Image (cartoon, rainbow, N blue to C red; front, side):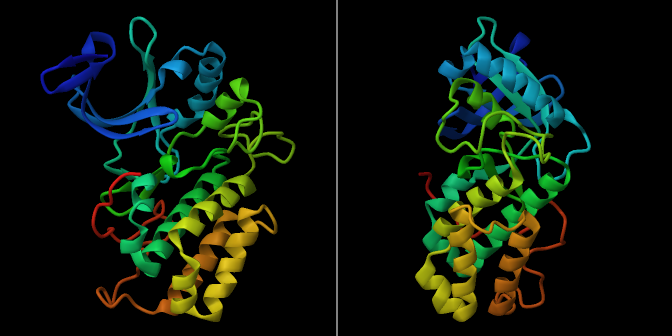
Amino acid sequence: MIRLRGGPRLGHERRYALPGLVAEDDLGSVWEAEDVFWREPLTIRILSEPLSRDRRFLRRLREEVRPLSNPFLPASVARVLSYSYEPDGVPQFLVLEHMEGEPLTHRLAGTAGLGVRGGLLLVSAVAEALATAHAAGLVHGDLKPRSVMVLAVGSVKLFDFGVAAALAEVRPQGAGLQGEGGGPGRATSEAPGPRPEGDVSALARIARHLLPPARVERALGEGGRRLLEVLERAARGEAVPTAGQFAAAVREALGRLGPDPQHPGADPLGEAGSGGQVAPWPGAAAPL
């Protein structure tokens, strides 16, 4: 990667301009990008130097991301448009469809401003996104806040599919992984790798941070306590519902809150099945 006026650039003939850093995490970094030839906005996932040099990881990752180039992916899953690397092989990077927004890690830093309704909306959106991915046979396997993008238009997209299986090549006992192998497109009963219920358990653990128990119980009473019990059991891997059932439970809790006083006539989740549609979020939060 070299730096030119207007920011760094990547790729053959410096094809990808990187005007802005979105986030840095354990995998590397995520950038706003532009294909300077086609003048097309994109998002680029740059892999860290250790991962960019790990041949076993890279070989498996390339295999796992191929299904994600399908133009008919669910709207909730970020499409991978290309895989590339710098002339010396470092860094390696994935070119993704444009995602204008911020990772969920940033939202977790500002949960106090979300309130119960905002937290429920966000959890419901991610659950709906998972449900559509699972229905298409895609299992994430390493769902974390860094792999959920909250878009500026008020929806969410999931990305970094296939990372769990690739990491399992080099970290067989890696923390946070559901299993070894079996990345996207391998949601079968006999597969030894990531399972849909593992994604839901991971979401339940995220939801516990977005939904402080005291505030949920105060807002929803007994219904809130029941929802928290569902979250706790799912987070522990006990009686894990499907992503669709999880989303329905959260939507039921939203119904108990009644209409949004700021938008009394609106469906707080937008159109069902639109890739996890939510109302635009208040205020940007500082990153973790």
